[in-house]
Amino acid sequence: MIVLSGAIGAGKSSLAKLLSEHLGTEAFYEQVDNNPVLPLFYKDPKKYAFLLQIYFLNKRFESIKKAMVQDNNVLDRSIYEDSLFFHMNADMGRATPQEVKVYDELLDNMMQELPFAAAKKAPDLLVHLDISYDTMIHRIEKRGRSYEQPEQDPTLPEYYHQLLDRYDGWYDDYDYSPKMKLDGDKFDFVENPEDRQKVLDMIDEQLRQRGTLD
Ligand SMILES: Nc1ncnc2c1ncn2[C@@H]1O[C@H](COP(=O)(O)OP(=O)(O)OP(=O)(O)O)[C@@H](O)[C@H]1O
Ligand SMILES: Nc1nc(=O)c2ncn([C@H]3C[C@H](O)[C@@H](CO)O3)c2[nH]1
Image (cartoon, rainbow, N blue to C red; front, side):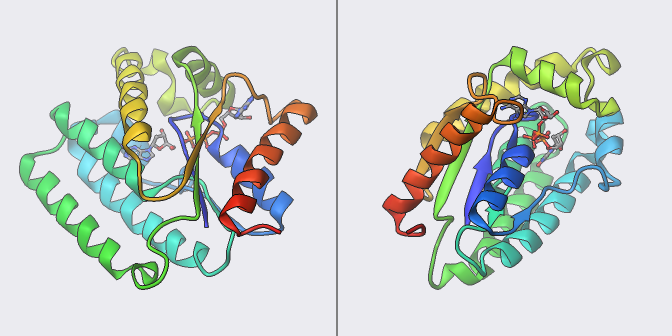
């Protein structure tokens, strides 16, 4: 299983599609457009942060169980990033210490139940898409989900800045599996065929080193 990570609009879903087609495997996407809690969360984060987190945790767990049955299936966000989001929101006063405790214990408990707890303890590779604030905003605008637009809510730019800051430390500390970082500002793997090929070559190389690609 290959896991993609990165902030909002980093290009995870786009790369998941590209990579899974290239490898002939299956991609598993985060529940966004059909997520009934996400718009509620952006409208009233304090009320819905915990519920949204439980929603994502449940869906993520379901995806991981399906994705891990075959080498090189692609997951478009890691379960570890859910926790990053939630702890950031909690530090912003949007969840109580009790909610954080329940979440952390539930996550811990669920992780122990994953089938790979017995054999493979983690993804085969984490591919992190690193983007700047300007790229993030540009992509959020390009994609156009109404509740994510900065003009909808004057606190969103600060939320996005904080998220990117946390991601830097998170990637440096991540040690559950081999990892690689791609410059998401530089490589336009969505529009530019040359960039697409370069990115796929870099990932293939890592997979060969891990023994999951011939
Ligand atoms: N490397 C790239 N170069 C140019 N455009 C890109 C790149 N990656 C993504 N995009 C564009 O940015 C937008 C967001 O991309 P995508 O939905 O893949 O991001 P994501 O990381 O899955 O976001 P989220 O976590 O919010 O779901 C899309 O419009 C996509 O076409
Ligand atoms: N609060 C919160 N916790 C999460 O675990 C989480 N995971 C994703 N998201 C939001 C970011 C994008 O708007 C959108 C798509 O990634 O969903 C989250 N929000």
